[in-house]
Amino acid sequence: RALAAGKGVVFICFHFGNWDLAGTMIALRGYPINVVADSFEPRRLNDLIQGLRRKRGVKIIPLESAARKVVHALRQNEILGLLVDRPSRESGVPVRLFGATCYLPAGAATLALKTGAKVLPGYLVRNPDDSFRGEIAPPLEFCPSGDFDRDVQRFTQMMVDHLAEYVKQYPDQWFLFRDLWPEEETVSGLAWAT
Image (tube, rainbow, N blue to C red; front, side, top):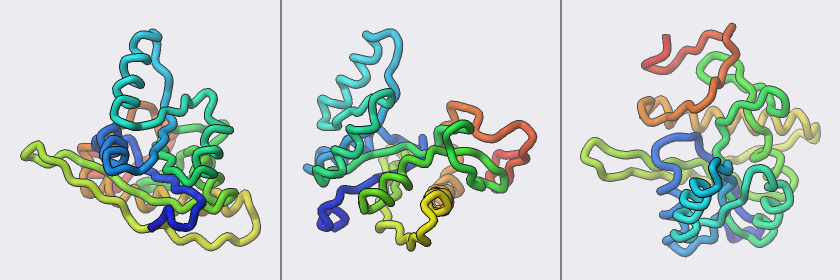
């Protein structure tokens, strides 16, 4: 239904659960999905990982050359998968996450506001019996104020608030590969946070 508007979909999640399997499941259901992904070193490792993703129908957009390709995917009315919990103090926007400020990428909000693409949060987690449970939420409803920079921050905050609810349900399935919060911040709201 979100693709019916013809402006593409931005599918957002954190590094949470099995994000690669989530993209694969979307592709296996016949939906065109593109994901922005880091390139790995050495090149053979990158070829292996990205090759496995492509083999399952997921189109890979390298992070270092993503700008035009993400817009093209949305203009083709395709799905663009973005992991939105990669800290970026230099180019990100400040958001509150579990009671502390961090700086997260503005890309998902910027793309949605500029293209009219729908934003769908979701996840795929492993259950104790080794089965999986996934959810794709309805599109986030955001009303722009006309102040673009403020709207990007507010929309990013809305996305983070939604995704944080998934982390609260399954805190053991969130993978923090990088320091998310500045050292001086105190983080609350997670069962394992101190």
